[in-house]
Amino acid sequence: MERVFSGVQPSGVLHIGNYLGAIKNWLELQNDYQCIFCVVDLHAITVPQEPKELLAKTIEVAKIYLAAGIDPKKSTIFVQSHIKEHAELAWLLNTITRIPELERMTQFKDKIRGQKSEVSMGLFDYPVLMAADILLYKAAKVPVGEDQVQHIELARSLAQRFNGRFSEVFIIPKPMVRKEGARIMGLDDPTKKMAKSANSAYNYIALTDSPDTIREKIKKAMTDSGKEIVSGPDKPALANLLTIHSLLVGQPVVEVEQQYQGKSYAEFKNDLAEVIIGFLEPVQKKYNALDDSEVLKILRAGAKKIQPIATKTMAEVKKVMGIIE
Image (cartoon, rainbow, N blue to C red):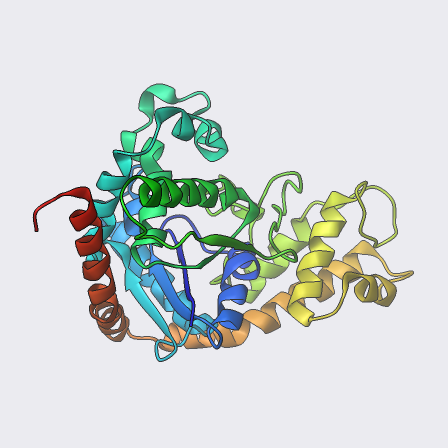
């Protein structure tokens, strides 16, 4: 089977947008691909992290993977830093990466706006490490959100450049962008994507939020002018809430709109909150039942399982580059 690689940073708060935009897609891929899902802690430290919080968040993300339905018998789950070849390959790829390619990265430009003097080299080089993550396992497909497609394009360019300069070592990866749910927007600002690192907790529904917290957040979620519960370019807030409802209940948006014809925003919001609570209940139950020590065993077993792939790829890379093993 073709390999799929993806990962989530252990920083901020995993939310319903992460689930609908990424993890939900992963669950569907498990039966058709050789899936490798990583907790990308080396990416997380490209911005300052509190060590104790990084440790806790790394385990938290792995627990969410498992609670959401990622099956370690079907997929490999591991921590990025447990495979040293990620960093090693990133350095070698740096030698064929051009500075203007990294300067063009939209996410980097957004993140440094107004704080360039505080930005680390790691954040600038983030896309090269991401390319190394993917190419190390010769992943053919990479499920990502729309905001990460530019990074996949760089990975493709680096793979093609390396293969052309040295030898055909790497597979050229392709992005897999989920159309529905690819961009779940902030509850407090429907013009911007729901963010793990948002300043306000009212931006997102965390996957670990309590029922009362979910009700409060949905109650305060932004809505549009007018009374009709419909999706459209002039109603971005309602379009976002309708998308969340639609994806969680498995109904097209148009059917949800029909269901709420003549009803108030308050009625729709109350129902949406209960839909989210009902959806998250079994996930949270599994999450709370997971023991940290068992999760660590799964992560270490995952790293041990895929270490031979990383070792083999690095041996091939070094050989064609003229680096003595």
